[in-house]
Image (tube, rainbow, N blue to C red; front, side, top):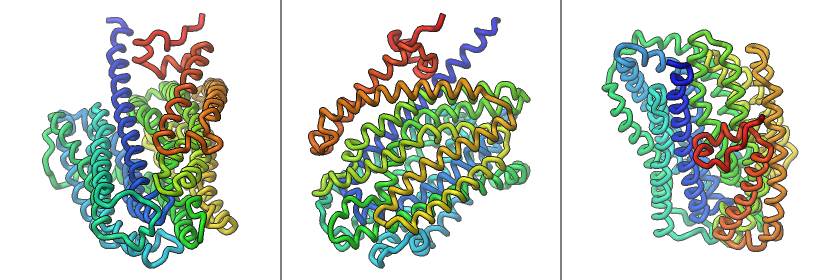
Length: 565
């Protein structure tokens, strides 16, 4: 059998897994946009209730990121891959692991929920008593999400370790559908936000529907993963007794990872606490409050700009991480550099273009999430400012994400911790210095800019350490790809800016006259930019376009660039 024939199925499986994961993430994120836009219609986006709900609802998410980004994702995957090679395909190990997860997460979640009040108090700044009371009520219903996030993370990684990548990425679709339905019921019962004093008139029924509905969505997101888990044939069952699982070894690895993620997420909580001061500052203004971005607006800008990273960089990195882990396990260090370079070059095609697109389309994008209240345009403009700033660091976020996966694949969690700690300490020092001079009404803008700066510094630091340990991974080629694609993205952005100007995007004309107009504007301008971008890449015969498009390029020959020579 020839070498090429043996590799074809693997390549096909790789492309299929990547496409399935990317499509699941894309659908989930798009539904997340719908959910966020509907929520803005229901409770506003630059309002006290929106910020209070966001505060309570984001705490479980940050804890989930600590778990999924730390112990579950980067520590357990190599262990699960090793266990899958056993005679029982890892059935015993996986049963014990899931049982342990359920027990530990249940106790941890109960403790967090009992501490809802103190948690909200510690994580906010300058909030009034009514704000704290509502935040605590939201937290009681939101914090149980932590348990279901933990179950979702560990079951998802079991599926990934057995080559079933799609389910983990598609499960959030269920969550978003449930939450969209819940917000629809909320609108039907209580109507849209119309500029009234929501905080004074808020009811327990509204709290139950919004926060309880959010937790229901997360619960179902975890539960649906047990269906594909059953189809693996592993025979998962409750199994206690955790001796012999190698938890001591995992614990040594996890100690550094947990430290790294703890530092990063504590930094996120500290940033959010500073931004929460905007809520009280806005409430104290007699007019112009709709232009004061708070935590909801800042998180919305991140939700939008992280989309290409989540679809392309995260999905591809999840697949490549398994290959990197196997390369290190087999002692094939020579394969590491090409894998990293391929991942960086491939993701440059969508991520760099998306960064420029977000900057051009910031206005209409902000308008979508500005709601329908009397000050919706002002709220949209406030979100647009944050979109521009968060988009600037997007390519570097993906670069950093890929590079630290190299260390994780070798089960080195100490180096990523040092990177994370260095950036977190520097970022927090800058943030608190900024807060001493920047008024609370502008703190969200300052933090958004700081996010971009820390993304750049994280990528640079990770690059230096990767090259120092593993040698050059083709830095010149990767940099050349980003520079060329950057120029093509800017040229397509100039065309998009011209079309946006014709549609009233810069003088609050057509593009700002409601959510449907904003959506149409984005569709027209975005399509114009994309067509120009693809034509430029094709004309320049950029090979990364073919690698990125994959199966799609093979089915649409006009999209596939010609090979050189």
